[in-house]
Length: 242
Ligand code: ZN
Image 1 (cartoon, helix red, strand yellow):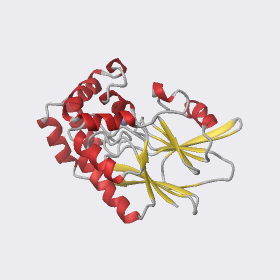
Image 2 (cartoon, protein in one colour):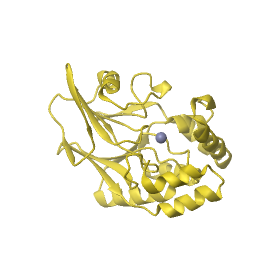
Image 3 (cartoon, helix red, strand yellow):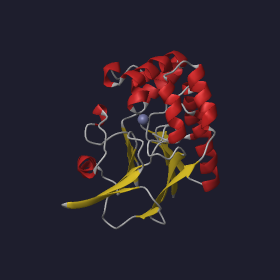
């Protein structure tokens, strides 16, 4: 079984299209999403519709739940709050209902999905380091878990008292009995100084997980963000990936 996993699209249609066409060439059996379909960029409705057509299952992120009116705006910093408020005006009732219907966790026999952490997923905690990953890994019932939220791709593993965290590079090979929590990075607003859109491939037969990157025309996304009157930094950051 080949899984494709994406996260943190953030209304960036150009990045989403680039990732979907890359994934179409990879021949995945199931496409999953770890949330934050909307927020920040200027194409929330188009991204929601594309996700509904192409993604097989997924969880809601803080931006999705806020756009659906299920998370208080106080949760967000000023720029994100402006983007959420603008996003709400661009979505149909049906699209908001869809975002609000996304669960906080999802799993099948091989993998678990969450936006932030399995420990209190409704609080959307950020996992930046191994100690923060422990609480989620403890609750993870499958060998493989996927998340997003920080927009920083990486692999977290734990074995009893020891553990490791590695920024995503190359292919990760599953080890028997060692759970891994994978941050799949961000499609629409990478923050690891690599402006290319990120996506993840998991082959459950080969037991390999890989984060891949694909370039997209971010200048077009920047133009749309500026034309919409959204905060300029939301456009600027796409060129450098921060
Ligand atoms: Zn996000």
